[in-house]
Image (cartoon, rainbow, N blue to C red; front, side):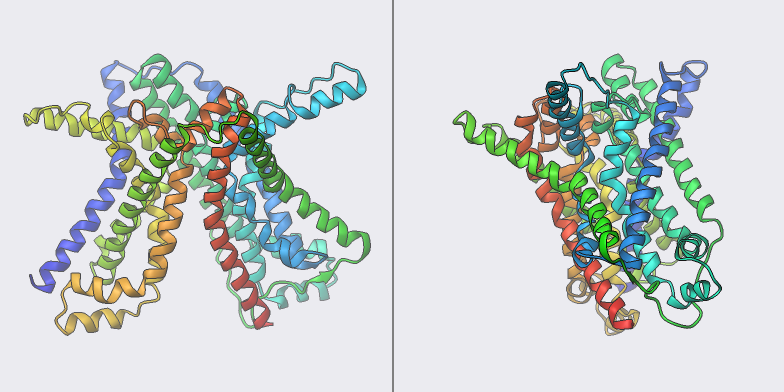
Length: 546
């Protein structure tokens, strides 16, 4: 095979990968439009107005909460020195490892009407105190505590990259620290804040279990419940279309918030404002605020889970539920399959771009990342539609057992949906390593007669190995945590650790859910530790530049 023909094959593979990612979304859109023709008009799903209202309120509430926590903490650790700051600056990323649905049931077991805190208050005060914590407000608090690190990381990077001269000029012109922050640094960080908020709101749209615990019926929950309770797949598809509209609105809002902002530094170096030391009680107050957020979002719930798990292990003489091993094995098998598939596709995409596939290949490579911005409910419904079309085709071709075999009889649907969702993070991680490979190296290998496959295995793969390792970790951990997709697509009798936690927590069996929840949090901590390394390296570069 000549190098030219080989390049065409690699380019075709990238286009196929893009089609694989886009297919579920396109299937939802086409079926939603076709549905109006089948039913002679749109049928409004029951409770749609309330679902839209609660989704909107939840999005706004979590956006406000994460903006205050993320931006405020980023400003605190960037512009001030206080006791424990050097440790807290990276520990504040840890709540990212606590899935919102796990923090949700720990929160309810502690603060709900029947929770420990209100029971204790009733006993102490002798009153019938009952403060409801379920609803949009409670869900927004829990999700803000787990999602604020998205805004924190991006805001802190934006503050640290700004030139100190900008800050000093504002101060020399008489602005107070607060006014210089609000009038100069905050507008300059607007693109990063918009990107962080967009990530947060996409996570809110994807969430499924947390909102159910708090009795909030968002459109994502409506997709699942409509399908499972009424067996009206057409209405579920229409609701998936509404979820997709919310996702588009979030992305449009991010673009609108960012506007045409393009900020660059002219002269000087980054490093952000010169930190000021907070002395006395102000310093300890800053430490207390950081510790309080960290405790609420990670340390206290994790400690409670560990205590529950320890009590459960020591209580009934049965060390572990006998089903735990099987469920954990299911999670591991799915995670490994999805991680290998995503990394293989990411390697192919990055390799084809380096071979010089042109505008079409670069555009297709960008399309392979859009699945991560699509809510899980939409991916789940779209995967069912797409595989249903494949089954119909197999049936038409006379393949025995075509209908239903691929959708419900195997893990194909789950793996495909996961690949659609998580190919984006794998591509980003591998592409970051590809960016370190000089194009001249690829061209030299090709000009010396090496074919594309040999260039991949002998040149590119050894050089991008660090990115491959990071991608494997990120995707496998995301696959273990994922809940909506596996709930919608799992074969009969197939359960993963995340589904088991959801089922136990839904029945208020907090102690039984503790051990698998600890396993999920421990696995989720791995990519956060990788982030620690990046934050610390950025800190060192920042200090060296001063």
